[in-house]
Amino acid sequence: MTEATTPGHGPLSGVRVVELAGIGPGPFAAMLLADLGADVVRVDRPGGPALGIDPEHDVTNRNKRSVIVDLKAPDGPGRVLDLAARADVLIEGYRPGVAERLGVGPADCHARNPRLVYGRMTGWGQHGPLADRAGHDIAYIALTGTLGMIGDPDRPPPAPANLLGDYAGGSLYLALGVLAALHHARATGTGQVVDAAIVDGTAHLSSMIHGMLAAGAWQDRRGANLLDGGCPYYGTYETADGRYMAVGALEPQFYAEFLRLLGLAEQPGARTDVSRWPALRTQVADRFRTRTREEWTAVFEGSDACVAPVLSLAEAPDHPHLAARGTFTDHGGRTQPAPAPRFSATPTTVRTGPARPGADTDGVARDWDVPRLLTPPSNPQ
Image (cartoon, rainbow, N blue to C red; front, side, top):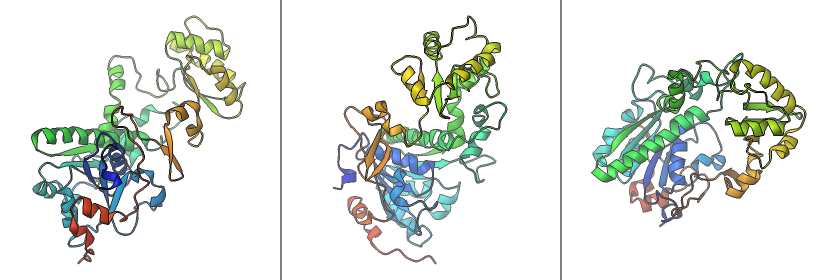
C-alpha cells in the first residue's frame, strides 16, 4: 500500500478519483479531493503540461499520482476505462462532446462502472448556445453579473485574478457536486453525471445580492452599496507609504471603535445617510494617508474595529495569526496554502509534492490492478 492510499490521510481516504489532465478549475477540484485524502490519479497527456508550467511547481497537483496515457492512441481510451472501472469518481474538463469522441465519455465509463460519479468541469456548461465556445474566467463572470459588481464606478471593472469564476464558481461547485453524487452512489449503487458550469456556480454565489436587489436594498451599479466599495467604512484605503488598509466596520459598535482609533469624531447620521458617504470617505482617506501601513496596523491591533493590513502573497504566510493556525505550510521547499477545512477526527496534510507526469505508473498499476498501464502505449494510427 502506497503513501497515497494509506488510511488516515483525511475523510476521503479510500476514495479513488481519475482526473483527466486539464488546466484551471478541474485540476484544482481534483486537488481538493486529494487534500481530503482521496487517491487521485491524474491521467497526463504525452508532451508535457498544457500551459508550460514546470510540474515541479504546480501545487494543484500535490497529493496526486500521475500516469501518462495518449487518448488518441488506439489503446488509449481502454487504459482510461480500466482506471474508470476501478474508480469512484472521474473528472474531466473538455469541451462538450470531446470526451465522447475520445471514447471516455459518461456512457463509455458507466458501461464499465455503473457506480461511477462522472464530473464535468466547463465554463459554459454541457448545453446552451455558448456551450461549444472557448472562454476563460473573466468572460464567464462577466455574463453572470458578478464582474459588473466589482470596482470603482468611474473605471472599468477590474480583472479579479481567476479566483471568483474558475475556483469559487467552478472548482468548489464541482467538488461539492461530486461528493453529493458520491453519497448518492454509495446509497443506491447508481452513478451519475455532474455538470459543473462556472457560469452556474458564479451566479449561485451571488444569491444574497439578488435577494437584496429584489428587496430594494442593493443598487444594480458599482460602488453604490454596502459591500461593493460604495460604503466608506467597508473598503480599502491607501497609507502614507503607498500600501493599503482594509476596513469592514459595518456594525454600529465596530464603526464607533473604528472612528475612535482612526481619530475622527463621530458625526450623527453620517453612517446611514448615503448622501453623506462621499464626504465621510474623503475624511477617512485623508486620515489613512497620515501614517504608514505598519503604523495603522499597530493602532488597530487587538481592537474590534474590523481593520486589517492588505498583505501581499509573499507577506501573508508570516502574519502571526495565519502562522499560528498553520494556514500556510512548507513542503518540498515550497510555501503553499495548507489543506482546508480542518477535521477533528480525520486530519489532512500535504502528503506529497506535485505529481510528475508519468512518475507513478508502476504504483498505480499495482494498487489499482491495471496491468495494461505497464505495457508500452501504441502509436496513434
